[in-house]
Image (cartoon, rainbow, N blue to C red; front, side, top):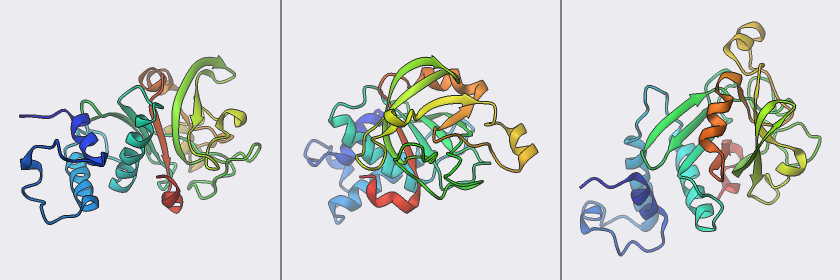
Length: 230
């Protein structure tokens, strides 16, 4: 019997495993609860359908799933879509992934910009303060769609106090930008930078917003702050 991915993922993070079929434990009876969760997350990760895209790192993926279920239980997310942004990678690489957790597949993998004061090619500095022009890490819930100075844009609510909860006050939103493109990289040796927003390629902007709007999870990762994410 083939289980849907969300059922499996929910089992990973719930405190009680009593309802799981016996076969899920037969090979792992000697493992503690943390090891069992890690084992199952690895299994899910290894079964991700890439659809010819690259995959996010396991570290980024596993923390994202843990946080996804933590905040979903509190009612922050209504969709089984998760957007991962890995700011440990070069801005010249495709470091944004949109994953459908119900179908266990990558829907899109593309470029994404970080803030101008966060770094040049690589992101190194992060802030939750207004006028910092730095990116903020952590978990967000996608909110309203609107048309602003960057065209169609998506507001974000930061869910972690002190890490990104000033997102609205800072007007940190997802939007398209012409400086997020392979052509810009070719001409400037690196991707362009925003004022702190996760800016995406213009050609994918409408598609991305359509996929992730209405209270889905967006997670921005960097290994230097991993202890603060969960």
